[in-house]
Image (cartoon, rainbow, N blue to C red; front, side, top):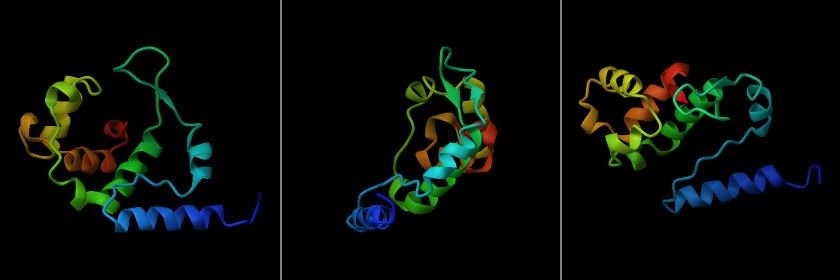
Length: 122
């Protein structure tokens, strides 16, 4: 129901999980999903009924990096797996922006670029 503390409870659960070392992707403002969900674009790389939410994805990348950047520093990206979700051109742009070889990109690199660019965020 309305006003029973759902938001506060969820925020407390997220804070507790993060304090215990868990990585949590938390989007506290569900209304943003509704508002920004109106701006979609077809996914150019994965055909079918897939769509990107570039503005929301950019915000999510920034928030996730802010909350867990240090926790994610050691997670590297396998270029072969990344190529299932990103075009070769996008991977080249990301490695160029981060001034790194494509084989040494990390999850933090992807989040940094995604947080700066709606073109590369989704």
